[in-house]
Each structure stands twice: as C-alpha cells, then as structure tokens.
Length: 169
Image 1 (tube, rainbow, N blue to C red):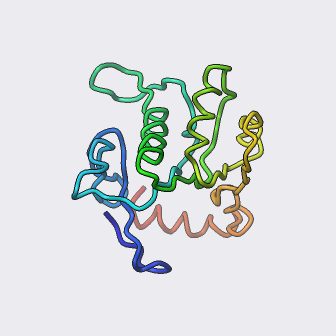
Image 2: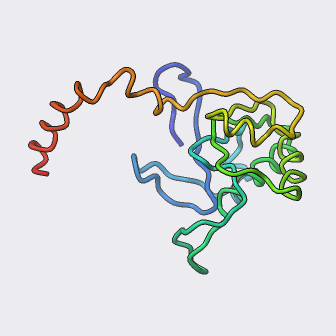
C-alpha cells in the first residue's frame, strides 16, 4: 500500500497481481487478486494501467506450471468481475491493446467494457482495436512517448555520462 504524498494525500494505492509479491522498484507489497474483498483489503475503485496489457495471448513469463502465462487477461477479467460484483468503479488509465480481438474475444471484451466506468488507451491503434465498442474511448498518450520532446538526447548525454562514471559502468 502506498499513500499518494503529493496531490491526493488522502489516497491510498494498493497494487494487485495474480500472486502476492514485492514491487521490484520500491519494495512495496503487491496483493493478490484473491485478497480483494477480504476485510483487510477493501477498495473504493479499481484502475487498470500499465503497458500493452489488454490482451488475451499467452506470453513468455516465469510461471510455476510452465513457461507461458495469460496473466494480463486474468488480471483484466478479475478486475472487471470484482467491479461488476461490488458496484465499485473500474477505469482504464491509458493501457495499450497490442492486438486486434477475435470475434469470441470481442464478446468477452464487451462484458468487461460494460463494467468499466472510464476508458482511456495509450494510442490510436489501441482505440482502433476497440472500434466494436459503442461507448466512449479516450486516447491519452503515455507520457514516456513525450519524454524526448522535453528531454532531448543531447541534453541527457552529459547526465548519462556522469551517472555511468559515478556508478563505474
């Protein structure tokens, strides 16, 4: 659990995944979706965000039962089921959709989208993959795509050189 230290000081963010763990960046705990709804793990809203995570395919991933995982799909569906079952709002904060959906996948996605209060995706291609959906879909560019505009490589090279030297890389 992490408190938002700046803009919304009363906000607490909890990370969820298919299994418990620890965030590799800051060491914060990651709760399992199985914990949702338990007295010690109540949420007021759910937000799906990240990279190209709206997908059905299996991908290479360390997994106890093998080398492929459909974790992204499972996380999306579990969030939607929880939102629909509890009436809690679910929103998408600019995830990507890397592939078009099959006819069968569109049926599932329509149900997921019906449970979603706000939908934004990271690019026009992702929005195009949702063209079957009649509801509103916003395109909100992922800020990483804007970094080069504000931090050109020529400005960052001296900083990078200094960091490499300081870290003996």
